[in-house]
Amino acid sequence: MHIPFQTFYAFFVVCRAGSMKEAARELHVSAGAISQRMRELEQRQGQRLFERTRAGVTPTAAGAALYADLRAPFQQIETVSRRNLHDHAARQLVVSVMPSFASGWLLPRLGDFVSRHPDVSLSIDSDARVVDLKSEAVDFAIRHGLGSYPGLASRWLMSPEMIVVGAPALLRQGPPIRCPADCLAYPLLHDGERRDWSLWLQAHGSTSPKARRGLSFSDEHLLVRAAAEGQGLALVRDIYAGTDLAKGHLRKALEQQWPTQFGYYLVGLPDTFAAPGARAFVEWIQAEAAQSPSAPALKR
Image 1 (cartoon, rainbow, N blue to C red):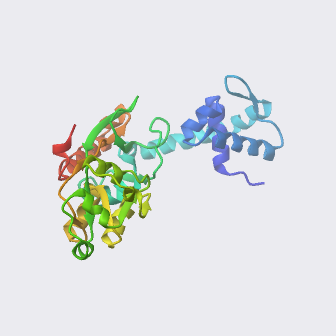
Image 2: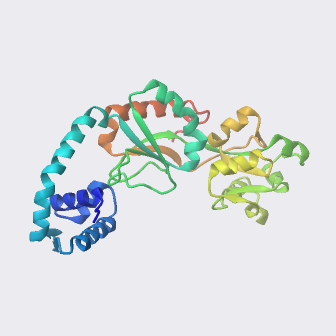
Image 3: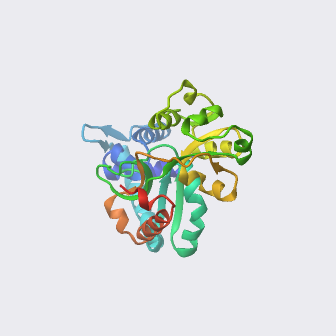
C-alpha cells in the first residue's frame, strides 16, 4: 500500500509540534488539510495514531512507534535541506500582487530587477485574494489601501490618479468631450463594482443613471484592453494605461483628473524588510514607483 511521502512528513511534523494547528502553520496548509491527511494515514495503517486532547494531540503507542521510525530520517533530510539552501534562503522572495497591478505596472519592469539582482530568486504570486503574511510562505504583498496593517510594516509606493481614456478612433468618430458630463454620450466601461464613473461624475457636479450602464470587468487590465479595442471609455488608474497611452493605443479624453482615495503599499513583516534579498527588492520597487508620472506629487 503506497502512502505519499508528504503524508508521512506531515505526521512527523504533527508529532514534533504536538498540534495539528501548529503543524499546518509550519507546512503552510490549512488545519483541515492536516487533519484529513492524518485520518487517511490512520485508515491506511489500520489503527489510531493520535489521542486528541484540549492542548493538541498526543501519539498513541502505535503513533509513537511510527514517529520513532521516521524521526531520524526526516531530521537528517531537514538538516541536508537547510545546509543546501542556506546560501539561497535569504535571497528567495515571494511577492503577492493583484493581477491587474502585476500585468499593468509590475510585469513590464521586472526585467530590470532581474538584470540588476540575478542572485535574487523572485516569485510573483498573482492572486486576487488577500494573503496572510503572518502564516503563509509569502514575503511581501502589494496592497491598495491606507497603509495601516496591524502587525505589519508598509512602505508607500504611489497613489495613482483616475483618468478617462478611449481609443483614438472612437474619440475621433464620437462627439467632442469638453466636460465630464460629455462622457455619457459614449459607452462606459466599468470595473467590477461599477462605482467609479458615478463617483467621478458626482465629484464634477454631474449625475445620471447612465453612469452605471455598460460592460464591467473584474480585472482592470482587461478594462484597459477593452478601451484600447474601442469598446467605450474607461475610467482607470493612470499607471494601468501608461503603456497604451505611450504607444498611441489610447488617448486621454479629458485632462481633469481625480486622485484615488487609497495608495499602493509594499507590505510585509518588519523583519522581512531587513533581509538582504528583500532589501534589494524594496529599494528597487520604491525607486521604480518614484519614477511613475504621478507618484511623487500624490504622496499623502
